Image 1 (cartoon, rainbow, N blue to C red):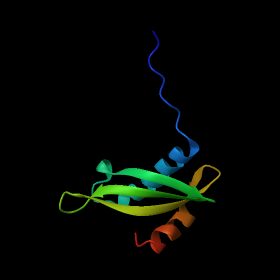
Image 2 (cartoon, rainbow, N blue to C red):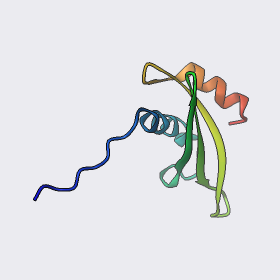
Image 3 (cartoon, rainbow, N blue to C red):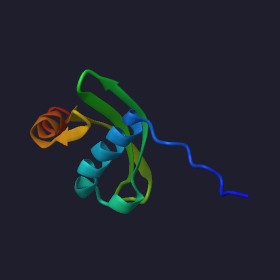
Image 4 (cartoon, rainbow, N blue to C red):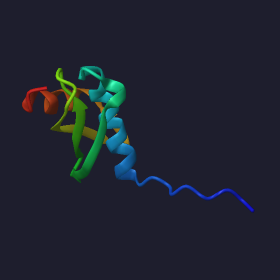
Length: 86
């Protein structure tokens, strides 16, 4: 019997993961961070980042990334990060 097939990730899921990877170095506990609520409007992918704060609790924050042809655009993403106070 073959092993169970894993569901392929959608383009939005892959882009959202790229976005989270860009924000991880800015977090107190990058390894424990995860994302929810990915959405896309035009070339901007928005996610909700869940990460621990200095007190050990989880906090959420929206983040945005610019994606062009499936790849994260660093310059555009920096602009989105600055606009949202990252």
